[in-house]
Length: 212
Image: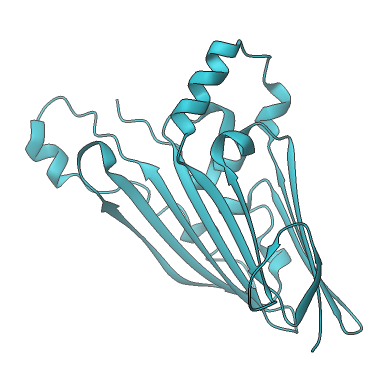
């Protein structure tokens, strides 16, 4: 049987991953709080069809291409600009790459939907300062029992090479952040190996910028 973890439910069930995933999120804000967010996920592709052999695998089509965009289609102030899935790589390196682009008038409208199901995004303006916060809640971590060292080491090995990367472009110069500021002074990046993120109950990302 073909088993996949979809990006739409990923943040709530990281501990129970059956197919490893890499995730990239890039958010760019305007000074009025509107902006654009780009999400890319790469999920291990498994074709478990025992009948049909190699031809069936080569002709297999992605199964998650319609699972991201519709979650935002009816949200006021949110527009789905792009949403597609394609297969990349060959053999054991084959992955499903899903690409989603959203524009928004307020980033808070995304909270609780799709890939942001267990996340909270906020953007505020006070005077000449702008502040951004994103919180990821890993609900499955609260239910996780202590694992033997052997199991933990196996999980670490399976997750090796898979990362979660977040970037946000702030209006103005960044003056305070929990992430890494880029050379442009406006872009902040956070990155975690999948194993580390899966073992945190909560991840908080913050950035503050000022008008230049």
